[in-house]
Structure formats: structure tokens, C-alpha cells
Image 1 (cartoon, rainbow, N blue to C red):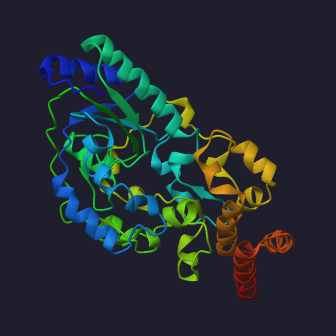
Image 2: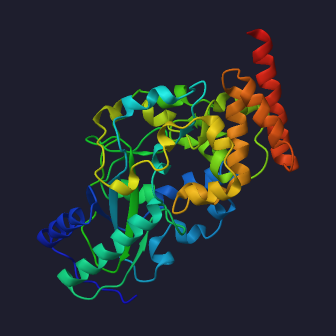
Image 3: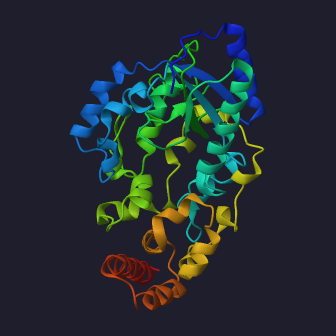
Length: 359
């Protein structure tokens, strides 16, 4: 990337922001590359092993904390926000801990956002080139060693909530982030003040107490981490608290007062596929591996694999209302299950039997 020291004037910067809206981004902001204030927090988080098995979080730290080290010649980062909520949260909040239906984090109900946003960012970057001339750039969305939340804060997208998600006053937190690293020098920020105040709703609501203190999440306790990133057995201490959450967890967002300003999206690719927004636990547990692969083609869920998918659902079935059919399909699933999955199925059967004996 060849550095371009020309400062983009304010009018042109606003034109770039408006151009971003043409590509489906609800907000565009600019950050510089200085993340010095993040160094002590990030190193302390790693030192406490709060990243769990996400070993990639401890690699390339210098590049993660310095965008110019990741992409040579970077002078600014263009940060974007794209809303993904397909319907008001009041319509699905009652699904949490439902006695027979699955809960899947709302961001994963549709197509994989990585591909959609990356394609939009690429088009956006090319369109910027038509405005300002050739410029060096690379696009990212939840990929590579990018400290995207810290960059979004510096760019004025929002502030870091106590749950570690970015909050925006007019839109809440139901959105994706993306970045364009560029050798254009763009006017940064200004950052948004923290508006969480004394509220601790997200800390109190977290089922597994993963938010160990404001702004600090121990991933090893987080249901999103356990159901998506973690590949081994899930500790029994967390299983009942997981309820019916089989992929991700939205509790901290659902309880956040700022999400009363949530906005829904017009992006059809983020709308639910295969009835995942209201699907029975038994139905998705009984899918064959081929059905799992077919239904999740082009979905972020596919990457956890069939075995972890069934592991997660087995726990949820153990937490479901007593149903002889659940015990039947769990027993049938024992045949051919590996040791890891077997342990979760046996636990779920015992939970169902105990609940049945009390009814």
C-alpha cells in the first residue's frame, strides 16, 4: 500500500459517508490508527485467560493494536455499521428459555454476514476510489487481527457498553461492524460519550455471569463462546443456565435499555431461513448431518460442525419440558455418538427423567 498523505477535506469526507449509505451501511465513521489506550486492557484480558481457546486472540497482538502494522501504509480506518435485526425484539424475547423451541442468536438466522458485508465494503472502497483517485485499501469484517470495537468507538459509531457490545443512541446494538483500512488521511471521530451510567442490567441478566465486571467479559463463561467457539465438552456448571440457547446468546442485548431504540433491517439476506426463528428443539436435533449441511449452506452456523450442533441441542433438550419423545430421540442418538456427544446426551436424558419423575 502506498501512503497518501493528502488530507481528505470535510466536505469530501461527508460525501464518503453518504456514499456508504448507498451500499447499505447505516453509519460510516473514520478512525486514526492510534489505539494506545487499548494496550493495557487487552494485555490484562489475555493475562487472565479470558479468551479461552480462542488462541488467535493472543497472536499478532502488535497488528491487532496497530492497524498500520497489519496493513502497511494505513493512515485511517473507515468504520461502518449495518443493522441486522429482522423484527422488533418484543416478538422473540419470549423465546428465551422456551420449554420446547430453540433460541438462535438473531444475527445468525440468515445468510453469513461476513460475505455480504465484505462484498459491500469492496464496492464501497472502489467507489471511494472513483471520488478521490487511486488509494490503497483492504476490507475486513470480523476477520484478521482487527480490534474493530475500539476502532468503531474512535470513529464515533457508538460507545462500548458494559456488555462489551457497541451501543448507538438511535439504534441500540443490533448491528454488524466492518472496516476499510486505507492510506487516505480522514478526519477521525469524534468519539461518543459513554451513556451506560449506573445501569448494570446486562451484568445481572447474563445467565452464566460471563460479564465479570463492567466492560470485561470472560469468554470461557459466555454462552456465545461455549456454543460457537468451544469444541469440547461444556462444563455441567453452565448447562442448566444455557436453557434453550443452541447458538449464541442475546440476553445482554435484550435487556439493554438502549435497545428500545432498535431499528429493523431491510436486508433480505438477514431474514430467517428454514424457519430457524421458531423451530422446535426436537426437529433440529433429528436432522441428519446432510440436512445440517444443506440447511446451513451459506450460513455462519455451519462452521461449528454437526457434532457441536447436536451437543448444544442435547443440552437444550435436557433443559426442555419433560417429553417422552425427547428421551426417545436422545437414546436413539447414543448409537454412533462419540464420547463428547455421548456425555451430553446422557446428561440430558438424566435431566429429562428427573423432570418426568417430578411431574
